[in-house]
Structures are given as structure tokens and as C-alpha cells.
Image: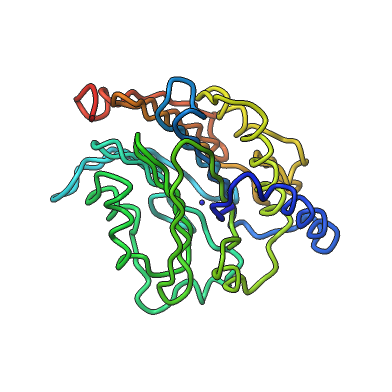
Length: 293
């Protein structure tokens, strides 16, 4: 859940940083890894929004899909993990809002769990918010370092949550954006207590390169990006892992939000010891309505 909402103009600088990191840090990195990316407007074939999360973790983790009807709030459909790191990792609700998260792994875990840390943040946002603007307005909930990529059919917002409730929001209309697992934006770069890992830098650089390689983008094209193995088993967007118990890609969550309402949802599950699954869901089938405008 590569998280700096950096524009494509930063690619050349980040490429130099990537090369330096690879030389200094090698290919090892903790399991806390995700690649988030999105496109909106004229950068999407037919308009609307495309948004994807590629989730990396260790094979002991297991993921399921849940349709949740909260006592109060909106019905939502979510990618949920069981085991070492339980909770919602991505979801879409009946109003057509998509929320994804990524770990701020450049901050040690004990410090990410700071006083006032908001547990179940994605569940709260999916149940209570109908639009990107409503998510941004919930800044009081943004406690505990992490990254969010949120989207509706009109815009995308990348939210970097830093220590002590410091927040940076970048809204994208008619463009592309991406994030991995370290702070790269403005004053929050000082929140990186550890050097960004080689994988986080490599994945960020590569997804920016792909986002600028062709346009307009399609859902099939974004799914192809999620399968990219350009940098090998541990540094690519799709990670197979050098070690049997090491970090690898465990799931892909992809959504096309249509400009007139409705959505296509595709989820790829790669749970260890189970057959790989690719599940296609239509907005109307999930929520009993053809569209939300």
C-alpha cells in the first residue's frame, strides 16, 4: 500500500536515486511492500478512473474477499487479510469510492503504532465516505504513519500520513500517480527514518516509467503493469521472491470506475498452497444497482 504521490516529471531524479539505492542497499527488503498506481480523465481510455494495488507480503499471509454491510454506513467489498497483518487492504463501496493502503516501511513498526493510531481506518473510510473529498475531510482519522490512494470517478488523491498526524494530500485529475513504501513528498521526506529500500525505489521508478510509456490506459493494460517482472524476483512490481518464505506478490486489486457510473473490479489472489484465482466482479452484481452518478 511506493507511496509518494509524485508526478511523472520526477522520474529522472528517482531513477538516479534507484541506482544509488541498489548499489548501497542490495536486493533485500522487509515484507512491508505494495505498489499503488492510478490514472484519471484523458489518461484513461473512455475516461473515468483506473486504480490498482499490487500487494506484497510473505506466503504465510492469506487473503479473502468480503462483502460487508456495516450497522451504519455504506456497503463495501474488500480485500481482507488474515494472519500476521489482518485487516482491509483495499475496497470499493456502494457509492463508487475506492480506498487502498500501503505501509510506511521507512519508519520502524513500533513508531508507526503511535499513540492515537487509528485501527481499521479503511473500514471506517469505506463505510462513512462517498467521495474522495469526504475522505480528505476525515483528516482527524489520519493517525499512524501510512499511505492511502483513494479514487472516485472524478479524481484520485494520494494521502501521505506522517508521524503525529502530519498529512500531505495530492489530488490528480486528468493525469497519473503512483506510490510505494516511503515518503518522497515535500516536508514529509524527513519522516523517513530508514533509507528507502531498493525494492520500493525500483518499483516506484518502474511504475512511473510504465505510466508514461503509453496512453490512454486501459484496465487490461494496468493489469499487465501489475505483472511486470522487469527488475527480477525481488525488485519488480510483480515479485516472485528469491526465497521460498520471502516476500512476494500475494494479490492484485484493480478497479475501473466508469465516468457515467458503475465499475469493473478484478482481483487476483495468490494464496500459498491454494490454486491462483482471478475474480471478476461487476458493480451492479455487488451492490444491486447499475451505477452511482
